[in-house]
Amino acid sequence: MKTYVNELLTGSGYLVVEVDENSPSPSYFSYMRPDGAYVLVKDTISGNVRSSRYLKFGTFDTYVANWANRASLTFDYPLETTGWA
Image (cartoon, rainbow, N blue to C red; front, side, top):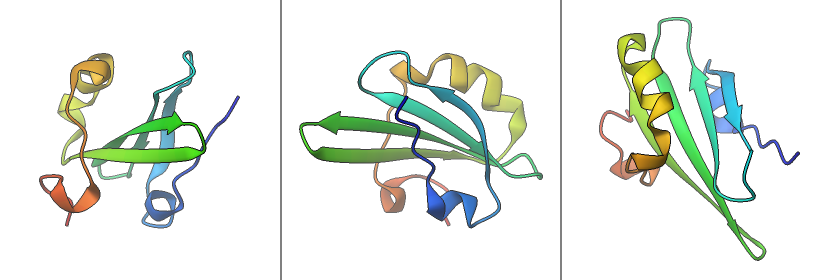
């Protein structure tokens, strides 16, 4: 198991909710704050390079559907992700 905890998110009040590491790459992680805001992270490893891309959402009401469809969502760099601020 290669669990990777994103310190930026955990330091901002997000807790790890779910981890999908069933395949070698990519892995998916979900982080959530007590107010229901959540972030999905797609972690890809190619050789010695790890790349993390993000999706941020504001409310829990979309979490279940987005986690279920995580493989088909578009992830991006944090500053390019809508609503990252």
